[in-house]
Image (cartoon, rainbow, N blue to C red; front, side):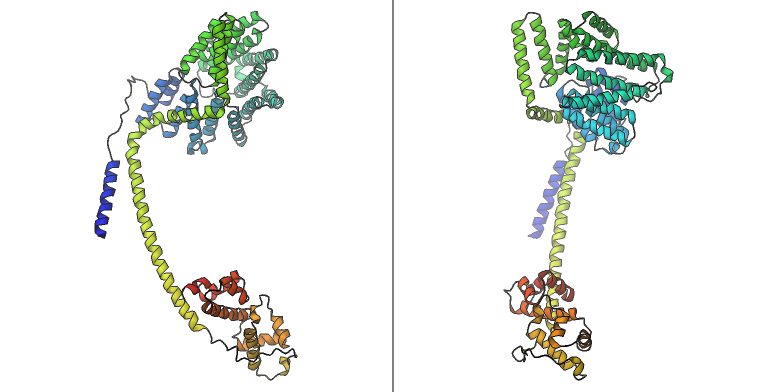
Length: 582
């Protein structure tokens, strides 16, 4: 019968393993990739203009082994983070959080800094101020650990911006001003870049508070610093991580064009409400820059176009923005676009359309105010998008391995449980037999207890004769003391002391020690009393099966814990084990 059961179990396991080894798997079809090299730099270049193409190149680079697992996740997060859709941004967020636990990040501060920078950027695009502040604080702590003064000030500027968004306006502006003051000195490309970023963050605050007059001198300070750099480039240390990777002059020019164009944009927006001529001048300079021709630049300038009545231009950019969002319109960006479209429609006399757009804006704003609903929707979608490409590549290779590992683990656990169970039962049997032997030994080693009825206890209070006056044969006195301790249950006193016995029998401590040396095998008083207590405890355990261990301990002058300890030390088992094996 047992052999049949074993055979059935083996066959069942074999069937499960066979089913887990199914070779059918989906095949990833790669589009025609031409001669494009499947390397990190090519992927990042494609990311800027064609994210879909970048994903295809990334998948192929992974298959070819050109990119390791850490780089694959990092680049994928980078591509997602540049998307306009909320779902892709959430996907980037999840990947970045996973990367923070990677050994390549834990062991390399530079990698950790890059991931934190991406998380800060994602939080800014998502208007998640709390996350923005949290990741900025993490970055600041990293900078302090690495003694990176300029990078710390650049990050402190981000923290100052978030403080204003979270209600600490005065403290946030003070922090921004302090960062700008410390960074406002030439001589370093990295310091110049950090200075420009800190100034832009304060401009963001001033724009939110509708203070265009204070924006103008800040934007002009960016232009002045860039002019100084161009005139004295050789005096600036080449220490910026934004530019140190390239010796190509065009990369420097692109950086200068980008920073200068943004300053033009800030000035155009600032002047749009008060001096339309200057606003148009700076808007023209903005449009003439290389950065001004990009989509992200056109998004930046929408507020100026709206203030200047350039509704068609602003709406063209808004329409492109909406097209790129696709169906992902549950976000703050789309709400702003609806509001701008409503303003433009009203200005052009389209009252009904403006009312409809403003109602949609109000409804979406109400939905977005419930952060829990929004976060749950995006979180679920993001988890799918973040893993989609990775799972397509790895699914076929990993599914059968996972099944085999699970089955093998279950079988191994069953074997281990069987072995442990057998070993436990065997040990319990050995221990039980050992305890029974110990009980027989303990019972055999107990002295025959004196007959209490036959003993003549002396209850008189007459003073005893001193041991110093009795005959040298002290055995009779020791028997008298021993019988009194046993028959009168003096041992049951938890606080029984040597002096108590000396006082009772009128002898000195030295005389009592001599008696113990001569008649109790040289035991100390404490050990002698404990021996009597243990003997009485065994008698009570044997004769009173319903008496609790605690009651027995109290009856013989022990605490329950002390009885257990003394019993275990002398007999090799606890009182409870002795009782179970009597």
